[in-house]
Length: 148
Image (tube, rainbow, N blue to C red; front, side, top):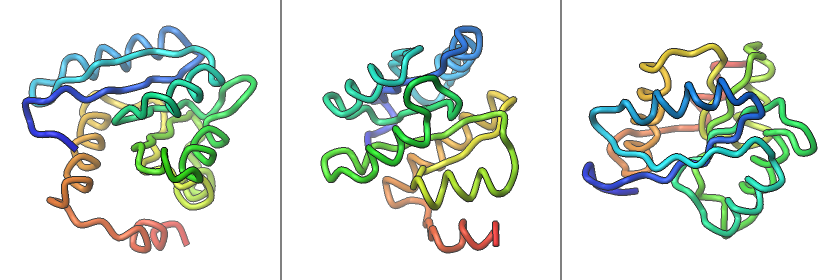
């Protein structure tokens, strides 16, 4: 990833404009990190742009028309050239099964249940940055075992 003075690219994919605007405001209000946020209301465009531009973070709502967040995540994580994009799935479906499915089946890096606070979003992103930089250990098996 980048040092603390760098700007992280974020593709935010949510069909709900109000939700997307709120999440963008949360990211831009971070005192520690800088983000360049690009919002998408349609999943096919976001998928194609993510493949081409490889943002640092892809924040995806699961419930999207045409191509849902699970499909986008799985397609990106299955391709060698995009497997390292950090994918955060978000949804109002907060069941343990949905979380397990998102993390295991579709290989998302993080799953956040809506509604969530600014602190929750920023803490999860900070943890993901630290994991990528090797400053925070991550064992996917430990994450997965929490759902079994």
